[in-house]
Image (cartoon, rainbow, N blue to C red; front, side, top):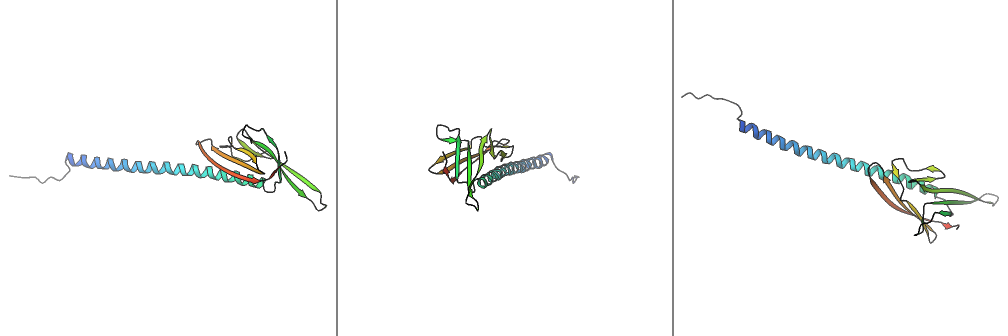
Length: 164
């Protein structure tokens, strides 16, 4: 009897290799897709926090030497308002008092300080409000990322007196 020594793969061996390869590729793709999505979410959150820090720093700078706030308006039922004037009182060398007034308002989702828009176009502060309680200005910031439907909220407190 003559037996031929044939080298090669049987159909079953080929199907097993293809099946294992397909499973490994689907697992690798799933891991890659999950990592990419997670990375994009982290970038979006980081950009939202960066915008919030910039807004907070600009607001802190405007409130740095403020002695008094006036012209709250309009007041809601719970005492919240979306605009006010901040007054910095200084005394010059001749002991004369000078007032510098800063207009601060939320208008159409944008924060304006002396008519200068502070937030970027892709972000809204529509739900940001101010409240004056016990000689303190309470600021409830809510920064909305308009493109990615993300929100970041934070609270700040400034000790000032009211001229109202």
